[in-house]
Length: 545
Image 1 (cartoon, rainbow, N blue to C red):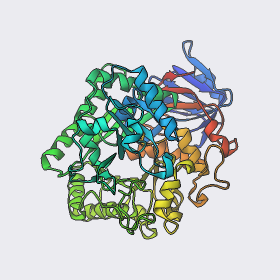
Image 2 (image 1 turned 180 degrees about the horizontal axis):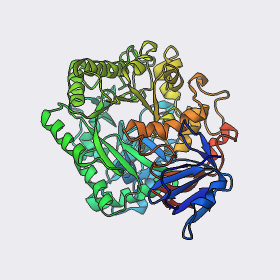
Image 3 (image 1 turned 30 degrees about the vertical axis):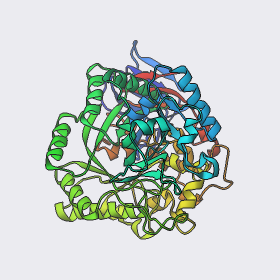
Image 4 (image 1 turned 135 degrees about the horizontal axis):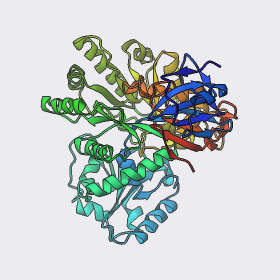
């Protein structure tokens, strides 16, 4: 096997005797690779290893295991997820009793916490598939305020104490994108708040100080390393969050490559665009980048806040409402593009997706073609006529396979209805239409941040225990190679970094993950059993159990 070398320096670290999926279309597979400093210097076969060695070279025998490029989570809210590691975790608690017990246990272990906060509850886990109520929390904790976010972050659940602190009563009105859910008979707030209405409560929760945020990020980075995540694209941020990563970078503690998108906000002013351009100019290195702006066009299917072209199947009174008027969105996206910023648009409903495509088309007409790498985030439903527009406009389909876990979509499917179901989480249809797929977790707005769980869903469309037989909408499956590419090289392309990372080839940054089993040689239904056994970041081993 012919070795490819970047330069002739002897290696600091060699991984050999493995199956190395390089994500390099020109090469495909290798048996060994050499790393010098933070970069890959050679890729080849076992016979080349002796030529790469020097006395101080560290050799790691892969023992036939699969090595792949470091995983790139291309849409994540990493600070929120990391802070959540210190809160009540309701992930996987799918009865009201289980959720109440976790809150009760956390409160007992943290008597000094004024507020009890957490996340992870799922919409379909409440009796009769109803939304959560304040009484559910009052029954176990009435004297301390409690506020718990849904797993997707789009709905909050408060107890009566929290509502009193926020002064939310029957007379309270909310103007904006969201809703104070009320009892239909009494008009009293139920304790459930959708979208922006959550801020009525969350603004009263004491914010963690800088030290707490930094500690959370360090804890989150350890979790990421254990899952093989070496790059993230933060999907909503602000200058303060950027400064946290910058501090970790300066202190040489950053073990993730971070690319940050900033929330657009309404209205999007020229002053705001100027601020983002300055941040972009200051942060454009291999570890920390800025230069993208994110728009929220709609909400989510489960709470009927995603913007649909036709009413919801389980509630014909609403089709959801977009968060932006079309003309204002088109103008703001075009101005962002003209400023040289990359644009993300959160769009889940089919109307939201069409509005996002229309906005990108308007930007191209207004500004002319350029390498903009427009992105639509989530795309849980789509009209068939909009599928080819991704390729024709050069728009990336940035999606989360974990959101389509069949164990979590019962309520979602009922809201969408049978007519729209075939194009639900349409990875396969988009790929066949020529769209570029990029995958992520949306953590903490997901049931798992583990890329392996996402790959399992993308390839199988079945739960880890095999439900449903034959897969959920199997036409939307993708191949293992597509799924791996969407978590590696496509993620690098999504942040303009494909010449730096995302593939294992000479000259690329040395971010490598070794897995416990060869995904290409096992039953696809056992993909979820795979574990990370080694994570190399910038040429350094940062995780080895």
